[in-house]
Length: 495
Image 1 (spheres, rainbow, N blue to C red):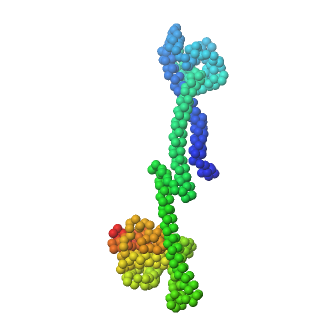
Image 2: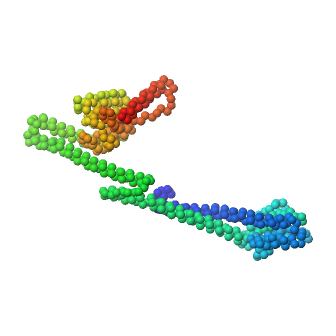
Image 3: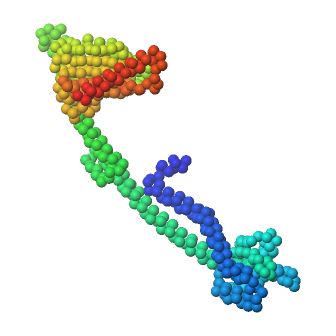
């Protein structure tokens, strides 16, 4: 559902939605994860700070100054500058045998509720009973959060507990500093990221809008140019669109020229048929006799039918092949022999050389017959002395000794309405291309040493495993022969 909704948005809306999701993720991450980690880090830092500040007191306590008259004065002077934490000593009263607490720096204690001291005494008693060396934690008292640390000290007069605590004023200031620096730094980085992202997005949206406008104007038939100074994928798309437009214009021009030529060619037989028919109707026989005049009409009607047949066949060929040719194969030797027999009378002076094996191609016989007829018709049009036909497994070649093709025309041979020098409609080779591709073969034309060759072939997959028996050996040998033949063909292609 979300992906469908996301795809319906424009690029700008998608970017804004991504920014909103990123902000939501950042807020969730900060308040539920980062904030908790900051609190833990600050707590650990406070315990470390209190421990380091307790060490001078521990040293004084262990030096037996507690028994001296000026022991507390010495400790107080040592701690008088401590305005962060309050330090106390919890010890057992010799008279009442109860635990009592003595504040070493009362000026820093402030208005601390007595319940806090009772809690610290209880914690100290528990720690001594468990014989723990230290204890630390947090407690909320009168709405104020306190950090405390207890450390057991062995003195000459017995065990005492050094207690240190502080309210959350100092940790909160550190926390605010950390949070503000983190938030501000993150916001700054986020703003820079958003600015860069928006610049990048608009650098994509603007050329896309140009391409959209270009396509819309081309669709309206306007002469418009597209210039994008980009070498990325968008620039490549723009170049391909321009090339496509130029190619379409070229094809449209060729198509218009072809239609003009077809109209001209159709006009002649139609005019002949019409004039001869009118003459016969009036009792006049232009060719002397009724039979000869009607033969002229029939000849022109056959020419007209052949031209119309080519046009209709070009439009119907893919439908006919895809709907009827599933699983059908054709004996190419029979097709070639039939076409050669029927076409030999076109130019009797041209020698037809055949080297044909009995192989089968996928596809309908009729479509392959039309395909070879069109190539042969093209070959008869240009051949000087011979046409050679070679058929092997998945490979058919028809060559002649006519003039070589211009290199810039080879790629355009099989396009519809492309008419070569001496050609008539530009449909014959396009029909060949459609038949070949529909049956999953390839076709190409190339120059040879003494003329031109058209090749229809299919890529043969390599065998997956080596043969183990005699039959496998024969198959492998046949495969090697094919590879040798393909190597020869490639050499011919290069020449």
